Length: 399
Figure 1 (cartoon, rainbow, N blue to C red):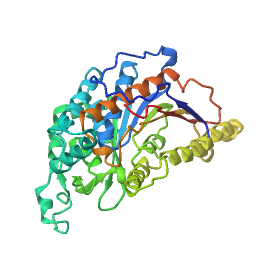
Figure 2 (figure 1 turned 90 degrees about the vertical axis):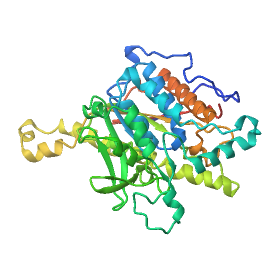
Figure 3 (figure 1 turned 90 degrees about the horizontal axis):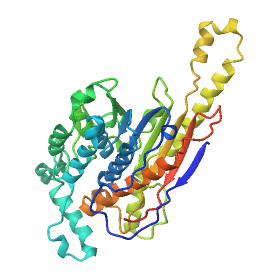
Figure 4 (figure 1 turned 180 degrees about the vertical axis):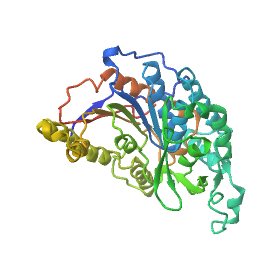
C-alpha cells in the first residue's frame, strides 16, 4: 500500500484557547506546490467536533486551495453546505457565523470550578438544546413507547437548523454546481445508504438536515416520501463517494477525521463509552482505502496490458469494453486526524462551549497548515499505484 505517515511539527500545549480563530501565520504555496487534480474535501460527522473542519477550511482558503467538490456527513454535511453554498470570498465568514451561533455559554460558568464547567455545559445542552441548531421535543415527554411517527420520534427537533441553513446557505448557488456538493444519509425504512449529489439533483435544506438526523436525538427527515437518518450510522467517513465516482478523475482529497480509531485500553466504564464511540464513528475509512488501492492498481494494470494488445484487436467491442475498466488517474488522500484535547470524554461531541469550539478550530487550522507545508502529494508515484494515502497525525494533544 502506498502510504506516507507525516506528523505535524507543533508541540502539545496546555495554554488556554486562543480568543481569535484567525491566527496570524499563513502558508501560501507556490504554484508548483499546489495539489494536483481536482480538490476534494471530505468531512466526517461528529457534532461539536466539526469546529476542527472550520479550521481546516480556513487554512486551505488562505493558501488559495479551494475545493472543487465537498462531501460531508452529519456536521460535515452542514460545513460542506456552508462552503459549497457560498462564493469563496464569503465562505469563511459563513462558517464563523454558524459556529459563533452554536456556542453555548454555561450560565454562571465563570464562577464554577473547572471540573464542573464541562458537566454543567453538557447538562445545559441536553436539557435546552443548542441555539440555531436543535431544541427539546415536547412530544418525547409522552415516553419512549409513544407512537409519534418517524418524523417526531426523537428527543429534539431541528427546525431551528432549517432556519439557520436558509439564512447562511445559498441553495440556488449549489444548484448551479459551481462547487459540487454531496451529502450522505441512510434510509430509515430500508437501511440503504444514499449520497445526494448536486451533480445529479437539486439539493436543499432537507438534504443537509437528513444527513445530520442522528437518531434517537434528532427526527428523520423525509425526502421524496422516504425518511432519512444521519449517514454516520452507516458510514461516517464518506470517502467512498470519491473513490467510486465515475468518470474517475485525478484528485487530491483532504479527508478530515474527527474520531480517532486507535487509543489506549479503557480502564473504566466511562472510558469504555468513549472508546466505543470513537471506534463506531471513525468508520471503516482505512479499510475502504486499502480495498480501493487494490482496485485502482488493477485498473492501472489493465491500462498497461492494453498497450500490448495488437492494434487490429483493439477495435473489437469486446476488447474495448475490457479496456474501459482501466484508468491512469492518480488520487492522493491527505488524511487529517483531529487531536484529542485534555480532559475530553465520550460527551465531547456535545461540547459547544466557546473554549471547546475555539480549541478545535485552532487545531484544524494548524494541522492543515502543516500538511500544506509538507506537500505530501509532491512525490514520485509508481505507474501501477494510482491511490496514495498520506497520513497526517497531529501532535497537538491539547489547546
